[in-house]
Amino acid sequence: MLTRRDFLAGTAAAAGTALLTQGAVALTQDSPSLKVGLIGSGGRGTGAVRDCVEAAPGVVLWAMGDVLLDHLMNAKNSLREGLKGAYQVSEDRLFQGFDAYRGVIDSGVDMVILTTPPGFRPAHLAYAVEKGKHVFMEKPVAVDGPGVRSVLASHDVAEQKGLCVVAGTQRRHDVAYQECVQRIQSGALGDIVAMYAYWNQGGLWMHPRADKWSDMEWQLRNWLYFAWLSGDHICEQHIHNLDVCNWAFGGHPVKAVSLAGRQVRTDPAFGHVFDHFATEYEYANGVKMISMCRQIDGTASRVAEWIVGTKGTSNAQTSIKGEQPWRFDGERPNPYVEEHRALIKAIRTGNRVNETKQVAESTLTAVMGRMAGYTGQEVTWEQVLQQDVDMTPPNLAFGPLPTPKVPVPGAAARSGPYWGS
Image 1 (cartoon, helix red, strand yellow):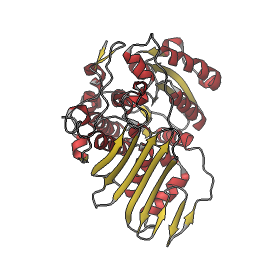
Image 2 (cartoon, helix red, strand yellow):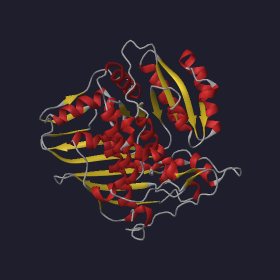
Image 3 (cartoon, one colour):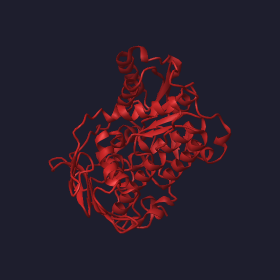
Image 4 (cartoon, helix red, strand yellow):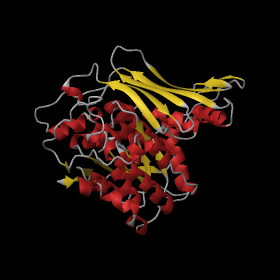
């Protein structure tokens, strides 16, 4: 049985003794191969491996791990067929269980891909940088204040060890977004006065519970619907839009208030998370960002970011209207591949990249919106960052695990895991 203390041991190492272990893997542009380990072998993980192999020559999949055996075996079969010679995972480098990440990281890899549910990300990142591995990690990178603090500690370790870290906020690797945000930051909109972020869509997948599944297995297989695993959909999905607004603004908000709830997805099969959030964020200079996210079938869809300035407006992606009009008209390579290309280039050239802090701040932005929605209270950046309740279950093992109660705004205020006191 893996306890929460065991699982988070890497966090303490990241803050101190990790600096005494091996440093960054030495690779050059002419390196014959880059050995990659996959931690979390679901759909996002297998997709990330394919993108990574496509991104540059000489990339091989060396080891794999997952808490669920069927996920691991399905990924093994599909990747062995799809990657051909780039699949070099021997049977002794297939790891299953809650501590599978340690086996992958210790297997001789140069770089790891972290694509488990986000609740596991802080501990996996801490152990990876402790062991001197370069990292690609999906967003978000935590689900609560303690997790974000751990990730920020790992950022410092990666900096001191010369490690490269890239996050799955792929809009930052989309050439259209890059050019548009550069123009915004150069003054094309004048002073930013308001921002709008949206991810409104229908529902996502849900796996009906099988009789043989324990509580833990059911929650793992339906991780979207449990905040300790996903952070709720404002974190797991809407973080993309929040990240773009933080990027364009050049900083993070300082407080938030939200109107949110569980209006349609009320069946216990959907765990305890909400299905909509409407959040007002405020930045240090008083600029407001209006954020909306929804996962309800039959509703209008909108996935976008809008930036409003004193000289014009922009969709933060392909166009600017106003005194300095602009429209992107170039080629747009697949940003899911480009993010891996940027990481591999940085590893091989020594021109380091470390996106840990920016994705940690965008993650905390999302967590702040969730806590404002769950509690019905205005919450501040510092309150959320210093939250003292770790949402990870006390014991990571297959067996009983009660579903948390659905938060009730007002009743949940300033008490329990929804506030952090």
